[in-house]
Length: 488
Image (cartoon, rainbow, N blue to C red; front, side, top):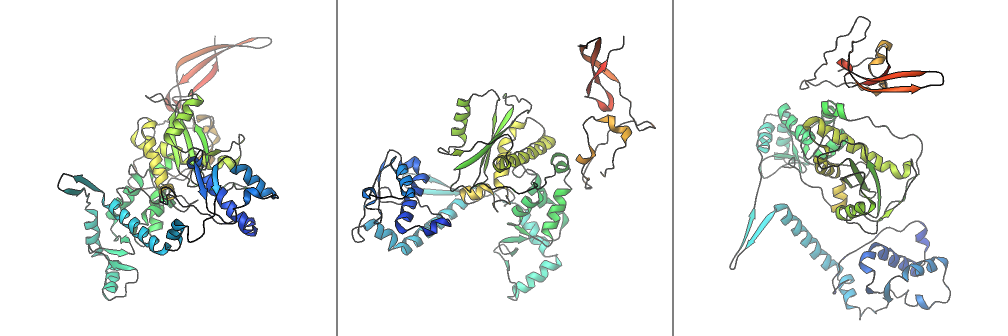
């Protein structure tokens, strides 16, 4: 409470061992819970708590170990435990005894706020009037859907059942568009489906999501028979995804899960992606910070020579989460760094997809990649991180070659290549694959020629000296550099 106004609520379920607590311990546990939750508000402030069973807590002669531990925590706060009878506690009466009336008003107020926010109204006030304005973007795709529904046999049958009052979840909206619940029914028109899939997969606000994420994003807006299968086929045949993404496998063995955080940004994991090309802004690495509860992530471009003070300033500026717990781990510890490593894999896939399609410096795409990651469906939490963090997702414009095993004679083409890294190419008529012009001899080898000598070195052994040269090769193996014996 502040100025007789409620400013925040908090609650959580009792743990198994807490169900055996007596009443006064349960109330004391509630006090400790809110003090931990709102410590940044309550430090160095005077406040009171109304609990009858805790009235004599500070005067008790005997305390159990749990109460002693909690009192050690409570001594850092300036507060009082004062009990107010029901008749004298007017504020409590207004909140508890008349909670139904107040709750209905609050629900209606929140509903109105949501509706006004969805309208995106702009207010302009003068000395004698108030004007409300709204910019509305329209798309012709709804007209295409309406016309396509008239020629789709399945949807025509559904429309007939709706007119007879037997449509079930199917209905016709105010724009004469057939819907399945709140989802628009898409007719079996190849070009129309392709435009929707292209927008949901290749737009700047949804950068090549996987099949599961894309399905969960689209199914909230559209419906057609076999939708999940067609989305998976579209994603798996995307040439950019086949080039940039790697296959993920489930980790072997059992893992010990960490304790679930109680509040957003209460516990985080972080890691650094280094070794990236230096950009024009002198960035060469990415600082990845992930909230363990909502899975929301921040991707911050940095330089590797940043001191700790500069990283702290960036954290306060970008995250604004004080009092967060950071648990350090060893070099490899799946229970703590697994979540961050999986986020880094997604980040690298999105970076490769952006650079392959659009080119340019990688740091230009970080804001879009961060938005795409946080606004897409995550199976671990069953929603998008933005939805878990803010209660709703951000709106996007969508809302309105086969291979064979290489023979041993070709093993010298690439020193570290292994056929286990190959994936089956999924053909699509729209793909334009440029084939390298490589002249292969009868023995399945290719001709390479030395371009230049980049370095020289004299290797000292016990009984002799060996002269080496660093040769840069051209041809199909262009870009390769090897050390060779210097022939006199």
